Figure 1: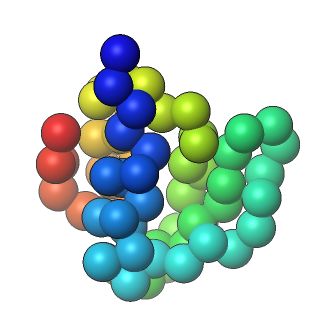
Figure 2: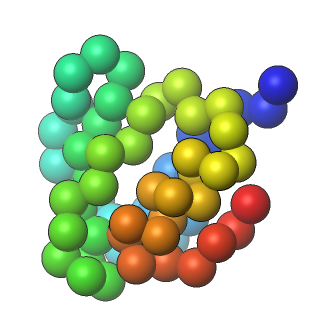
Length: 64
């Protein structure tokens, strides 16, 4: 199974998003400058659906 975290993090960084802090377990909290929302990103993102949902919450288009 593919691990989408690295690709997802690269897309978020390219869009200007920043890591705010570590969350519970294996999650990180990111801030999206596109819509000003905090987005929870699991470091163990194994599903393309989860990766696309994170991008949607950050106000970015689907990439997976």
